[in-house]
Length: 626
Image 1 (cartoon, helix red, strand yellow):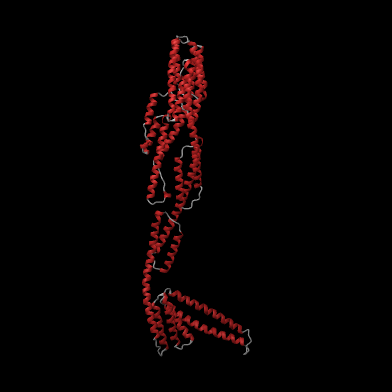
Image 2: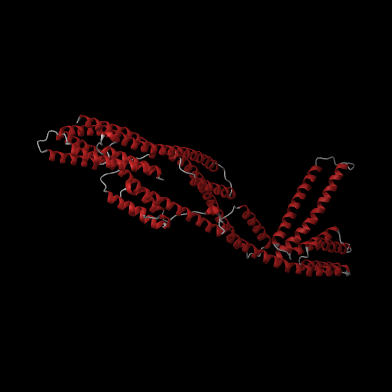
């Protein structure tokens, strides 16, 4: 019995050491506890796994994926559906990306600005809700597992306490042994416990199992039967562990190896003659699987390290683009193309080491968010500016439309040209509004200028006719014969002058020449009358006044002439008064040359006054006749 106890103790110690090795390797590499919950029946797990493996997201649409994920979250625990859920999310994201690309290409086919493109996925709120539920259930599941582990610890401690009491029971050996088997089964059925309590718990358990064996002093036949059963189970575990060496899924192999070690720990002792060989076989398979796992995770870490370096390069490029100063559409289009390329490149790079994964993603996301926030602000400011410009251009259209039928050609032309200048100074509007508002403004301007040009064409034709009439009148004036009656001659000349003024405008290029020719001939005819200078000037002034009668703003021009005459008369009278006052201060000697000069100036002033007053008289007469 002592030998059996020693063998059992040694075997369990070997298992404990090996299990520690496997647990350390497996848990550290996978980052998760791979122990199996023994409360779940094998048939149930198989049924769920078969169902989950039958789900093919590759042929599903987004709404179908959402329905499936929602159903999984409502029906199963997170621990069962986690991989399937992540596969569904990945498939969903691929479809969203595909839809975004298709939408963008269709948008470009419409000859629209790429910077105006905005993609909105109609299922975004639904998938966000599902993700929220997933993470909440994940958190709840984690809490539940920890709580379950504590409960399981309490159950196993209670089982150990029952084992302690077996040696004190006052009952038949058969009943005591049946109780022992029940406790062993209960021990196996209890699920995971906190890892920091695992070794101490197992040591305590095996100690009391050995005590039980000492107590019951099992007969040889029963013990051999038990050893044979244990040998069969451990041989199967050796074969299962060796088969892991050809399994493609490294993570699954590691998880299964952990499970096999837990089962090995639970199986009782074998015959001491084969115990060591059997353990070495299992240990050798374990070491090979662990070595394979170790090499895999070493290469995985190297690959993830390279992935991190690639993602850091992408982050740097994204940050450089995000911090650029973009001033026009061309710059934004080019940089948007580059940032989208970086996002696609990011998706092609594998995972970074877990401890850097969230940090590097947040860095990249921050750069992308900064870029698109700046872009959004840029185009929002442009949109606001364009809306303001549109309002200004609408106002210019309204003002142009108010002027388009005005026949005050000169004034309206100046006003419309000023409006056109203002139009050029106003910035751009949205492309969809640009042509329409421009056509509206142009139509108003064209309406006026076409009417003005048509009027000018008519006027130019009339100017040519007026030129012919004035040339004819010049010829008539060249052949003019004065009569013996001076007044009659003056009247006839005045009548010719009135006809001249009535004819109207001639082409600008002929205006100066015909006016000078006519005035020169007219002056010659007046000079022939041998009138005194006052009368001659008055007659010419009268002709000038009469010419006003055939122009615009007649009264304004006549009153302007009157005001000029009055001002000149006042000025000359003041000058004469000053000269007369100066005489009183001078010597009255006949030989005083200065005095003669003053008298001469006074005489000139009086002559000017006579002429000016005569002209003023004619102006007053004309005003009365209006």
